[in-house]
Image 1: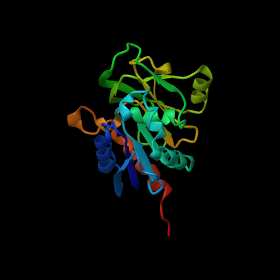
Image 2: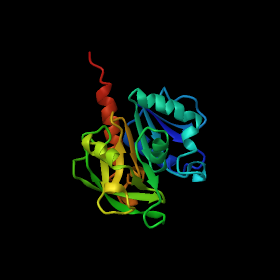
Image 3: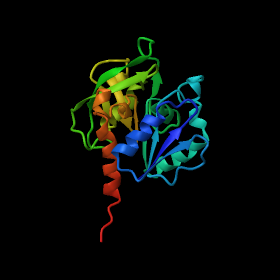
Image 4: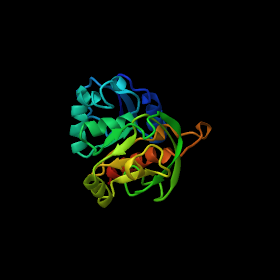
Length: 228
């Protein structure tokens, strides 16, 4: 598997993401790809890390959405490539129209940085196949605008299509239906606010993020089995 970690001006979780992908997916190649790149077609999986792309000066993800690399990311998403956006990466995917909904300021209007309970709502995805439905993970969050919002029609569609992948055990930021992560209808694009790449080692407080990355690799391997 060849994986890309997209880097925008203001990304600050790119190194964490790089090591999570490299150390826990058995990927053959993991590379940082700058926001100025014109293509990510050579990669099997694309990871968009957290941070403050372009300083979040306009709106989270709104400027990054127009970076040159995002045209190719959208094209590869349409081809069924695996795309994972975490925190600011989730916001960028929403701004790019690859995932529904929008992010508002947290309900208390404060930046939240702590470990929270995260429930697996759908384990039958390429991102969660190595978890069990109903599992409760301990994963850090670090965001000021992670309050997921959508209209009732969109929420119903997310529920009907099993697109809700993660929910918060408790209402940490005001997110509608306590949504913490969703996938697109096709099931190849995931956005989540919690940081699984920061829950990879026991000495960091949790190893519960590992299976997300091994699930992605497992899906790629199963789709690329060479039979004689």
